[in-house]
Image (cartoon, rainbow, N blue to C red; front, side):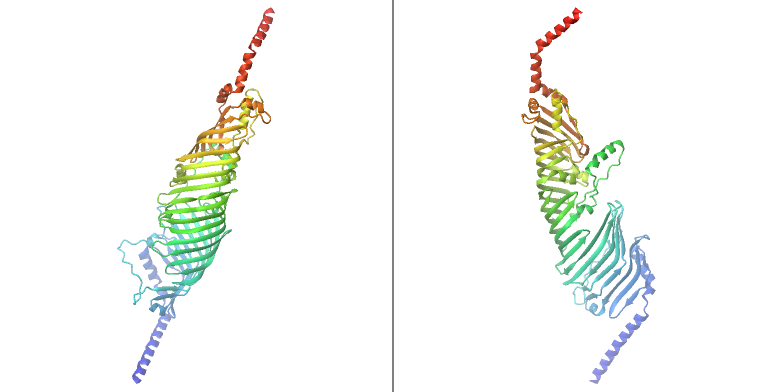
Amino acid sequence: MKVLKILLYLALGLVLLVVAAVAIFAMTFDPNRYKDDIQRIVKERTGRTLELKGPLELAFWPSLGARVAGVVFSEHAAAQPFVSLDSAHASVALLPLLRGQVTVDRVRLSGLKAQIVKGKDGRLNFQDLIEPSGEKPAAKAEKKDSGGKAVAFDIAGVTIERAAVTYRDLNTGQEIALNDLKLETGRIAENAQGKLEFATSLKRNTPPLDAKLALNGSYSLKPEAVALDFTAKLDESTIKGKAAMARAKVPAYDFDLNIDKLNLDRYLASAEKKKEPAKKEEAAKKEEASPKDKETDAPVDLSGLKGLNAKGRVEIGALQVQGLKLAALKTEIRAADGRAEIGPHSANLYEGALAGSLALDGNANRVTLKETLSNIAIGPLLRDFAQQDRLEGKGNLALELNTAGKTVNGMKSALNGTAKVNLRDGAVKGVDIGAIINKARSAVGSQPAQAADGKERTDFSELNATFAIKNGVAHNEDLDVKAPLFRVTGAGDIDVAKSTINYVAKAAVVATTQGQGGRERDNLAGLTVPVKLSGPLEAMKYEVDYRAIAGDLAKSKVGGQAKEAIEKNRDKVEEQMRDRLKGLLGR
């Protein structure tokens, strides 16, 4: 017993000695003496400058911790700051660390600022930090404790406040800044659950954008998956959703989103504010009068789909995208092997409904679209989506299209597929077939010609047409337009890439005895009026082939009546001429 007591005293004394030594070391150790060495080593290893403006503070018991303030980490071989922060603090519990467990108190970062730059060579300004050096890299060893088990991490939480991240692309000149960034998490550990709060404001220089995002929700961390259940506010949009990521060599994502309203045109870099249709014709005329720089062709890059493995569903109460306004949108989304399919999807739009699918191929930068629009008001749809005010009516539109290319114009030029249009009770704007027929009738003396008032339109009861689209040109040969007084057929091309038209419509007069001028129009029955449509769609011009009309008139009932009248009165005219001649000779 005496020996045991002596051993106990010796052990207790040893512990006290160790504690005293640690305490003395903690009180006398000054980490700031090594600031110059730390900054020198960072410079040698990374080629970047590390500046520690504030004091270094260390704690050793009951946790191993550090606090640092005023840190600036520079760009590679340059003086500009890459990352800076006002203060950072973290600590690790010592006793769990001896058992192979890293138990961290709340990590706090304040005043973090990061400058991310994509150079003209396409490289990011931090790639030198993550790329392997010229030396042969050592084999990665999994961190294990003496028992061979992987080190377990357990963080009480993360707090980031007053942070800002800026992204600049030196090729495009685009700048995106996240300001007032805040992040607050709960416990981060295997099989842990916690709360999450995130907020930031976003600014973009071109096209200009100011947006605010706030998100809060709950998460769970499991060996198979990370799951998040959240509610977010993006400007005027409220988003409720669930998202999960399965941990694997290629992570797999699963999501379910419900959005009350969303204006994607506000956020898409390609969706610049479009001109009003009334101003486009004026702009086209000015372009002819003065030279204008060619607009930059927007790039299309679907390579981001490579390596993406995701599936989910989305519901949006009201959506605006590329000018289109949709309601009650529902769609499924699947992405794998560099390809993505958005569909089957459905929505309500412009008094009708839409159903179809959209496929994107990031391996070939290809897009395939199949859509059926039923009972659609075509006029407002074209005005919103294509800024074209040339057609009115209600009916159906079926599209099967595919294209590939690296730019928007390249994809327009490579467009292939078919389109079918069936409309009723509408009008074609820009040309008045009825007025042209009246003018043709006036040419034979029936009525005076009627001048166009600048708002020409041809009303119809039914319009049907199919288009075969090849290399960006839509070709039609079966136009069939029905109106009370005439029928219209036609053939020609619409160049989608150049937004021009080259088309000949032929209006044939229908016999009728109803209404004012019925008999006169009956006299023109069978008359064909060719009208050539040409030029840019924004400033389309039409030309009537009056020579062809004259030839038709000679063969028409009117032409026959005129010829008959001349033959019938020939003797009378000759007699009158002889009497007048005698009178002159008698004088």
